[in-house]
Image (cartoon, rainbow, N blue to C red):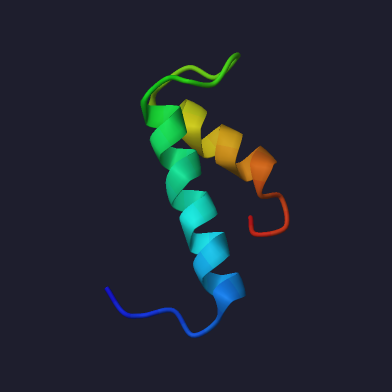
Length: 50
């Protein structure tokens, strides 16, 4: 993996990684595991990026 150029970029990437790990571990209320549910949740969470 390449290094991050800015602290903001590193923070955003790590936030995304931790979000996916949390979903996969089933630690979120009202969010079922599964690819379609994960895609929907992330699309709602990061509406600007989608």
